[in-house]
Length: 227
Length: 341
Image 1 (tube, rainbow over the protein chains, first blue to last red):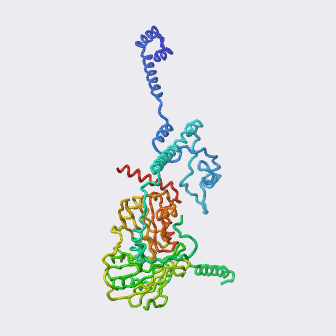
Image 2 (cartoon, helix red, strand yellow):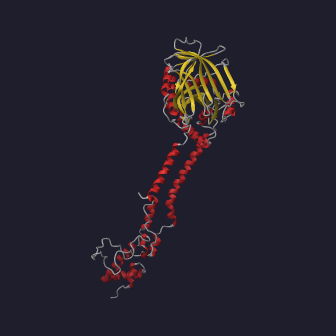
Image 3 (spheres, rainbow over the protein chains, first blue to last red):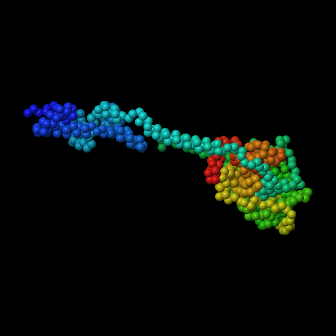
């Protein structure tokens, strides 16, 4: 019996012509091996279709959350570290120098009496280098770097604008400083009030008949004000 | 102790001695308050204030005011009935007498002035003298630098002030009052029936009312110079609006500042000289200043040294100040008033 072979794949993919497809289906009705194989191919194809569904990347989700709130914590991807000999990812000098944790010849460092020390906190194994492509995709784009700063600046600009508008409105509303009625202070009345409350004997000029002796001390005219 | 260690110790000690000497030899500032030293004359002044309520007297006073290049002397008849009133009259052509009632507010002013005097100056006894045939104790009111700001002669028997001279920084007389005739005790005679009664304005402002007026934009400073504090305030409603009378004192003199809304005629805003000419017809007194600024008219007067009067004037807003913020604040006030209806 001649099995379907490569035509089976074409049948599952729906690439056979009408007559060819009828012959293949007739064969499948009588051949258990080909039926099993076709079923397997269909399952495989369904799984492949399911795998094709795109999932949002973590970077994308992170940027989405950054849009709705302030950026929290340091960036997930620190700048590229130097070589391990220069201190690793923490920068120069942030890790103990080479050989301080264990001797060059291997084994545990030893105390003065020669006993081996237990390594309570072994140096973490160096992380496997991430693929260059992943680092490139996770590096923040220039605009996304500017975005949080602009969020803050936007509020500052809005606040400054409100203050400027309020001051401008008040300045305009302040208007002419010389408003108000024209008044002439009642000097003689005020003089009486002052003399009474000052508790001093000077008698205000009730009328011109008061005995007053005025002596000019200097040739300068009487001062009436300083401005 | 090794000699090497002694050197820095000696140097530090010398430096401390120099600092102490420099500090102690620093000349006192005349405007330092309170003036250092013991007040051994304040008790006599307080007794003098009390004696006005207990002792009647009559006589003639010579009142001298100097300032602005002129000296003015007046002869005034005084009749004081203890606990009732004081009558000031003219010597010469007949005219109306001025009757000042001895009301509680005025007695309170005496106490407040004495408090200010104690706060600003040092009052000491400076010997004795004879005034109008009566033995008097002389008190000197000293500034912090030791110069005399005033001298007061108090009757030794009754404590009444017989003479008082207020001096400026240069020692010149600014204001003086002295009895040229006096009879103390007994019945000084009845009060005149046709006298002009003078009393302080009825509406005395409380601290709360002053604060409310300040909130409303009234410039009512509580302290206008190193020695001038607001001791009392009164208010009166005139046809042109409210007038506020503020009395500032250093304990010796009283400077009255009258504040009212509006502006002076003739567009003389901010120029006291021109404004005073406008108001007083060119005859403004030396101890009197009138100006307007930012919607208020100010009238300051007092028998006080010229610098004290000028200091009081400087304590109020003038047109020299930046206009921007005052205009903005005025604008906020107007907007708030418009919103509140």
